[in-house]
Image (tube, rainbow, N blue to C red; front, side):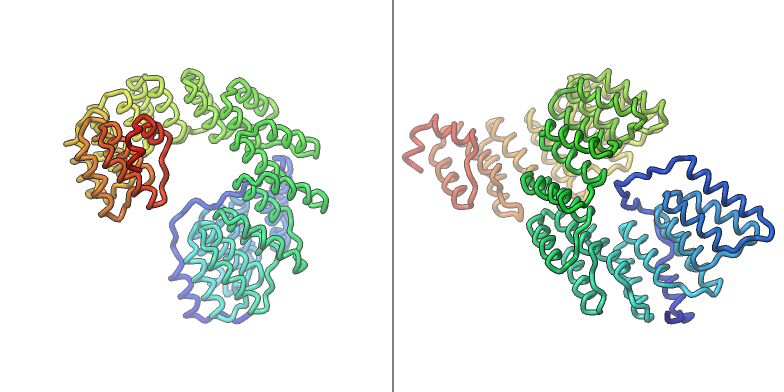
Length: 563
């Protein structure tokens, strides 16, 4: 490896430290190590610390590596501190382990502090050091910084290997930079570094997540002709993409092909199938996959159970959703915040608010902190059950307990009061948001605008539209469609038509909904000539009439002569 110059060291450290902590990508895989196994390794570590004469740092590194495999990152950092207290000097391998731990704990800035320590100890950072840091940056969403570091180490004479390239390719795919990722794969080959199955799996996963599943399938077939054998990760990514695109026949065939090729699916593969089947309403097929999963010796985890609960909720089978929840608890699979939020949400949609609130209390007793989604679900449920004042009381109580509401929570409450006709309260909540330095979203504005339109308060609508710019927002097509519909229903047809024409002069051209709404208005007011003109215009623009428009045309036979 090429030695780092003093200026190169300064360049790396000044360019990339410090960093803010950003939530990293969390792997869906779960560890299966028992507390006893972890305790055994920690006990061995402590025994080494007390051994005289002191063992080589290599022995400590072996135990640290075992803990890393168990994902005990914080434990490794703590034990490393204890090593230093008894003057056991780390080597480069120790430092690389620590960098890896910090990166997994969403603290890539501390990983760079270890790089500074490596340089201070006069060690030479190797490709593992830099690849681990690049991976940490990618996990934190700092793809630009990762690419910069990649370019710097190449400029310093390091030759990236397939893992280094793959880390960058994977990071690019995660943020949808597929063309850049594929360009980098081409660059790999030109540099004599052949992409492997992990590299191609990242590309296939990225294509699937960008709804380019056909392209992903073609690449899948192509790499097989090159002698690269797709593994369980490749298959799982492609199965996920096929399921998401409702290509169930192809997904099922690919799953069977896996088994024929002796590629054993893992829990993630089964979870993908169960989750997508449940989301598509095919709960019976999801149950069949679950049975097969158990037959093959895989234990359902919290992700599996949560998907099933969601599937039963979608079917309105709350008794079965609750049964799955109880079964997972009895089997020692502890529900997480996501599991609770799913069940709470479905109870609220079914107006079973008491049961939903019971689950919120149960969460707290288990040491789980309800998130925004949970609180918004309760508020929605109460408002949906025409109990907005109780929703407001619940909101105030949770805020008094330390909960900091977000825009979605406020918007949910605001929508409830608008729907129930309490516009003054809604306006007051809107003002409260702004005073609390919570910036309303366009969705929040649309809720209040729609509420004002329903009761004909169009002066207030104009004030809200002018306020949008102050908050740095722009009205959407949906905003204008609300106003067109509101004006038309209150008999202000000329004003509604003017809004529609203004859209034609704006960057936001009328959409299918805009045309149908304004056509409805003219048909209801028996202005058949204008309605016919708009129908012709709509067809020319490639839009189509909805069922309401067709029904109104059928009621006004005279318009048929004009079409």
